[in-house]
Image 1 (cartoon, rainbow, N blue to C red):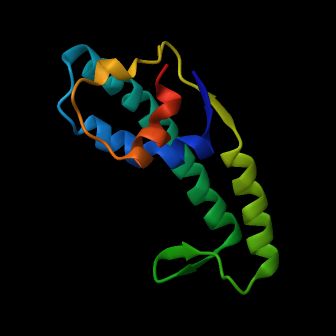
Image 2: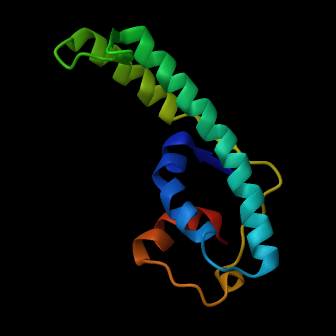
Length: 120
């Protein structure tokens, strides 16, 4: 399965909602494995993003921030973060599940739309 970091970030909240539902055991197991793989990608994304903030920002009260008034720094940060978000990641050994595998759970239409990339 392939998706961009942007797609992952857009869908992580909906996936969390799904993972908190009572699911059939096989489906829960498969989604748990998917979640674990995606958490690793999210951790690496956050580390890289934080390094970019340090690179273009300044320390203030113990935290790095990019000054919105520093147009040059904001432009460079945005360019690099856009490149990062466009990066395609691969989740090995994930077979999309069928919506029928979810059983009787209830999720919003928005969450189901967000999660469609994980279903066949």
